[in-house]
Length: 228
Image (cartoon, rainbow, N blue to C red; front, side, top):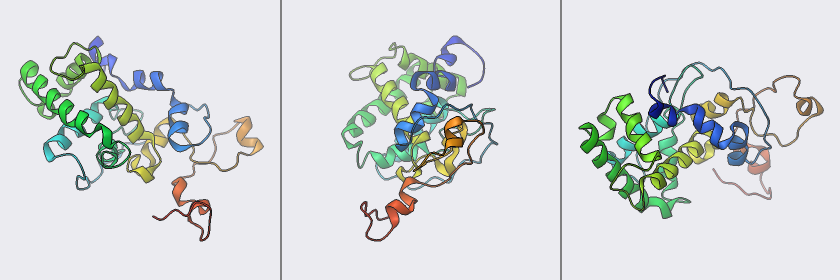
């Protein structure tokens, strides 16, 4: 997020990483061991083509895309949540493991747009980046009104799922082109860790493969029996 007011810094990419732990976030979402690494310098990626929505409405999808783009924005370190398709991950998960949160998203996104309209004069997706940051900061600080149970609870929901969608195994619909893993220098799923890897003397060669594309999951007669 660009330099600016204290409000904007409250929802910066750096603060998000401090709160969840860079290596720990990737490890928790891929099942791989955490490895301390420096933030990778990666080139900017073009915004991905949006898939058809599976759960949220078109209006909700537009708002959600704008939110994730500000929570983990593209910057000098590389692509962010928009390029990782974090909104697609959320939309897809709301028909599955996150289905219990569907009502919270419907109510929360409507409340966020209403609050943005009352405070900044336009729906969230139509605001400037700085105004979007200000609205999100109001949610984080729990001063925004019209939310059930409260604004901070919805902000925490959005932040948690945006992080998941940015750094998850791509099988789940996010982390497109592995931009999330590249951002934090995560080398990919390892079924074994060599002595050289454990010494961490050199950066391991990236493995750009979903865990579910590994032969352990795809071999016929395997114990996992994964079907693409």
